[in-house]
Image (cartoon, rainbow, N blue to C red; front, side, top):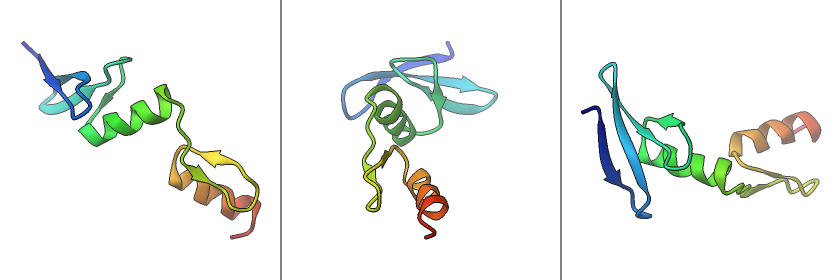
Length: 79
């Protein structure tokens, strides 16, 4: 069977999928497949929980990803 039930540190279930020799972890909420447990955690936080922990210190806008915040600061605030 290609699906192996496992548990992450938050005790949510995810499915490990063997696909073309690569192990992928399926999000327990949707069909998204990621390579690492950390990737699944970040995906859940951003997509399903709507967390935006990175705040712009110039204009009070929040972003899910640090890279997106950096791009915003560079393009909007010249930094």
